[in-house]
Length: 350
Image 1 (cartoon, rainbow, N blue to C red):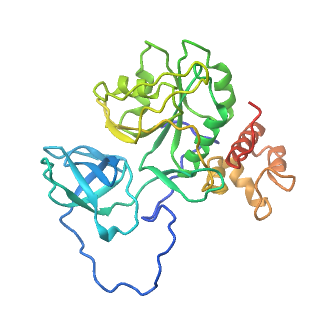
Image 2 (image 1 turned 180 degrees about the vertical axis):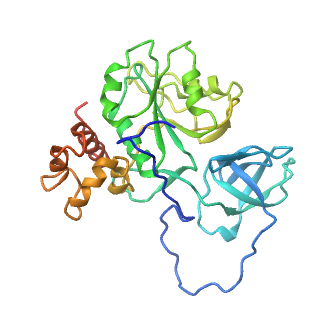
Image 3 (image 1 turned 90 degrees about the vertical axis):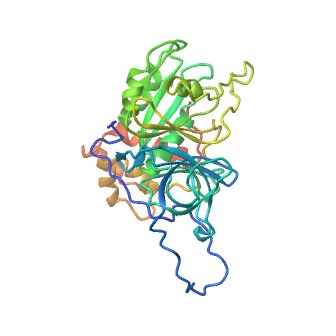
């Protein structure tokens, strides 16, 4: 398990089945019709979503919390969402219950009638003023932030924002630095040293043994802006993945979006990775300050002395005194405040 900000054991939060905030519908009369239990539903793992159709792996190896189980004859089933689920969203990484034709034969369609409780939910909003949560991936236990050291140059503020999303979702972050043959990682590594953020460095033609060891037997989601080499990594880790590789524009320094949707891929050495489309923004309008603070246990302990509604960046914050008393590290507090500033859309000094 990788290190995380503030040290200490990672505390997993529990997520109820309504992970995305939805406005209540009109009318308040309770439904009296009993819904079917679907005790015969087949367990599936959502590996792709496309225009209302869900590709699910059934009767095979699929994540089940921190355990893994195997049944004979794994196959893929195409399914639609049952009306009884209402407005509940289904995303890649979800464990679901399927009924109907689950044979996986051509032109067959099953129904998803149940979404199992989630252990995590990675979200982002359209921008920092939008509090509507857009779920990206469910049940991941590791967020791999892929960033290039050059071509395109690293964007620390984007890394900060992805870290905030990871802390909010209670997912362990891992920094993956690519293109180390073009630039040294020292400066970027030093920036995140106070967080205790685990990292791996890869270069063109180099081995990926360290990265493979950190991915093995875990459900990891890969995020990064376009052109950082994420698809190249995926193709190296899963040789038959066939993910399209982008090229960086020499004028803008930006890559072209090559992955249009998230997809889960099974690793040949055990575990799963979920490749996501390249992003150029990561809205954090939905993020709760306390969820970020929870990733800094020593500081979270001192935050109980802060006034109600403290944003932990103003003069009224008690964390400065907490650090002066030796209960927490000053570098950790600076990192926390930088991340919270990123959450609020403030410009960084990089």
